[in-house]
Amino acid sequence: MNSLAEKLNEVIQNENPSIYVMLSELGRKLYYPKGILSQSAEASQKAYRFNATIGIATEEDAPMHFQHIQSHFLDYAPEDIYPYAPPAGKQRLREVWKEKLLKDNPSLCNQSFGLPIVTSALTHGLSIAADLFADPQDCVLVPDKYWGNYQSIFQVRRGASLVIYKLFNENGRFHTSAFREVLLKQKTAGKAIVLLNFPNNPTGYTPHLNEVEEIISALSEAAQEGMNLVVILDDAYFGLFYEDSVKESLFGRLAGLHPRILPVKVDGATKENYVWGLRVGFITYASTSPAVLDALEQKTKGIIRGTISSSAHLSQTIILKSLESEEFDLEKHQKFKLMERRASKVKEVLRQEKYEKCWSYYPFNSGYFMCLKLKQVNAEELRIHLLDQYGVGVVAINSTDLRIAFSCVEEQDIEELFNLIYKGVKDLTESAVM
Image (cartoon, rainbow, N blue to C red; front, side, top):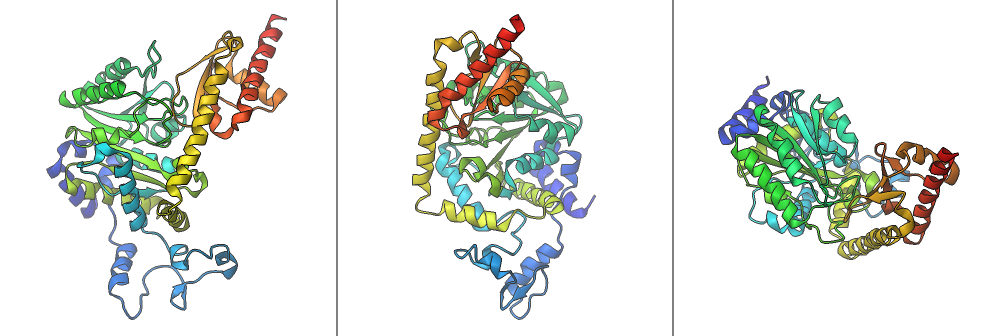
């Protein structure tokens, strides 16, 4: 093992042995090399005559570039577009995102957590967490309604097992007793990775305060009984809370809760700020030990350096300027209200009595999506029929559940959308009778 990795591991073992146990075999081997990038960083501070370290080309004291490309970015300096961004991301962007976390999550105040590290959006952040903490013998707790890409990230790539609990109880609330039962069943393993995704994809559900308190209580109980818990908060749709759910991430409530609980927040501008293609996300760790936070950052930078090297500089520049813009808060509120109206319209349309024989729907109060639970037809058969006969695209989650992204349907078109789904169900049920 590289001596730099050994030193990081020693720091983590000395500061919090439980977090060392949480690391995967790969996670223990990871470190940030003192190679070209570190030498170049040192040269950028001291090389006042010539800096011949980094692998970019310059011209007249600026990054070399094509003018036909730069002509599209007149508001951006070449220095903020063309050079490599640091592996952990632009420093100012990281600082501004941390300020945003504190503003959006009052429970984070007075808690110890690291500077967010820039990722190439949410999937990359989750992949980093999987590399750092997931081994083939590990289990990852997810609800029975989960984003399918978790399988690729944790199970296919890292060999961990997804362990399922029911998302909803009979009252249509988060099934905290099922969550607790499945969590404590992992006690003999001594470790679990818990993936909490609110607002939930695919259902669009975020728990209420009493449900959150029960989730926190179950995690605390497991830690007190000796379990080491990596709790990953997939906050992809953060902020889109339309009703009486909690309005902040569980990251703040978990920070500092117990030495055996490591909260890992994965979020980003992609869905929160409607810039999906710019691919800017963040991964943030919480620990009472600054030394542990630094060691985890060094290991994370090691992953980034060994995979994508760094995230896109131009995208980071655009997001930073957006966050610092005077128009940001106003425009974000405007888009929130638009999404809120769409969610409200969906619920209004679904109250129609004619739909009752065809489907029920899972609770939703946030995010981009909602899910129908079909009563009479197969979800995949209906999906194909809707495409072929009515030009309507929806997602079949399993044999009964159909995900509807109201985020990409205009408010005035929502009723027509559900009427076409209803028509598709009737087509299939009538043809079955014939």
